[in-house]
Structures are given as structure tokens and as C-alpha cells.
Length: 274
Ligand code: ADP
Ligand code: MG
Image 1 (cartoon, helix red, strand yellow):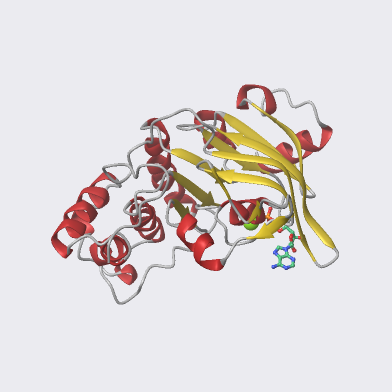
Image 2 (image 1 turned 60 degrees about the vertical axis):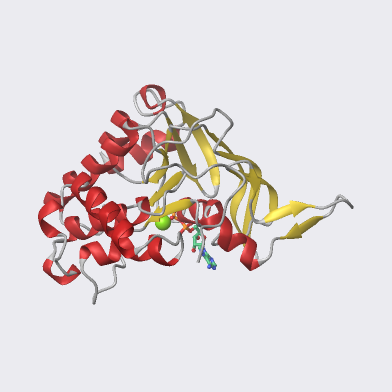
């Protein structure tokens, strides 16, 4: 199968930043509800290319739902959401009405976004290099040789040069999560989403995963990261957004929001996680 050409050029090499200055993600008054529960209540965010937005907030505040909307795994119910210059979930047609996008369309949009979850979800019967090379072969249409050469380069980049042929069960949680990051990068995403990527790890393994994410941010990957790691947010975020009850209660540079928060709820949250 051939790679599908999106409206924006796919980066030549996996894991390289995109050019341009148009917002990579733009959300305006995004609402999402499940039945009677309003889970996102008018979210506004802008993420520019090569920037990192860190989402903070208590469990149940809507971080995962927001990431899932950006990745078109959930459809928004109201508002505007654009990723990479394209509407996601809902679009307006000529008659001015909102229409839900077709599953195939959502699926195509998703290929330009890499997502890393709390659980690594590697294929247990495949080695590290096979896990990373699978998507590029199946979806991008690379040959086995091309895909494995690139997988080796990416696994080297995340510090797993000596684990190419290891199966997930032979790897620590931190190593598995680094394979999962390499696997996402192999699809040449324009945007990387991380949903509490270190929450399931033993404390001594958290640092090696955060280091890989810091390196990605330094190299100019555009990222949204839901995490409770305040140190990471301080060091890496261009912007932090504090969610509570589906609302961004405070956002701005980490030097402001995390050091001198204006909102009492932000202070209360920070005092719990620090
Ligand atoms: P966080 O990631 O910040 O912990 P979530 O986005 O997972 O928050 O959840 C926000 C709220 O939405 C929670 O109250 C959760 O119970 C609710 N929620 C999430 N997914 C669903 C769903 N599929 N159906 C119903 N409620 C959901
Ligand atoms: Mg969550």
C-alpha cells in the first residue's frame, strides 16, 4: 500500500519537527459530554509547532478526554478543533451546519498523530524492532529493510540499541515505554500526545522515559503531555494548562502557573503532587 498524502508534507524522516508557524492544534470552546456529564466545558488551547503543552489536573478533570478528542478517538460535541490545519471530529458544511466526520476520515487524521499511553500495548509476540517497523510497513508502505533500518535508528535514539531483538516480556517497563515512543515516532507524526506515560512505571524507571521526552521536545517535536510530573513541566513545557472539572482554570508559562499560581485550586493541586 502507498502512503496517503495529507494536506501537509509528511516529515522526510521520522521524528523530525515540522516546518511552519500555523498552530498545530487549535481548540476553541470545545465541549464533550457523555450522556448528562459535561466532561470538557469550553476548552480553548493553541499549540504552535515545536512547542510543548503540559496538561495538569486531578484525576477525572478531562485530560485523557481532551487528548482523545485531539487524536480523533472521541468526537467533540461542540466547538472548533483543528489539528494540523484540518477540522477534527466536527466540520461545518456549506449549509453552515455541523457534521460528524466519517470514521475513515478520522482514521486518516490519526496517522499524523503519535500517541503514547500509560500502558505500552506492545505486541508481545514481536521483538522491539518488529514492533517499531510494523506500522511503517503496513501503513506507510515502507519495505521491510527500510522500515527496520528506521526502527533501528529510532530505537538507538531512545537508548535501546542493544535491545532490538528483545521481546516485550524481556524488557523493563521503562524500556517498553521507550519502544512505544519509538513506535509512535516511526509513523512520522506531526504531533505527539502523551497520556500519563510514566504513571504505570516503578519510580526508578520514570527518569529514563522523561529523558527521552525531553530530548524529543529539545529537537522540536510538537507535543501535548498529560502528566503529574511537575519537574518535567517546569523544565520542558512552553505552556501548562491546569484542568479541573473539564475547564482550564489557569494556563500560561510554567514559570508563572507553577511558581506563582493565581488560582487557589492550582495551589491546592500542586501541593498534593509535589
Ligand atoms: P483524566 O484523564 O483527567 O483523569 P478523563 O478524561 O479520563 O480525566 O475523565 C474525565 C471525566 O469523564 C471523568 O468523570 C470520567 O468518568 C468521564 N468519562 C471519561 N470517559 C468516559 C466515557 N467513555 N463515558 C462516560 N464518562 C466518561
Ligand atoms: Mg487520564
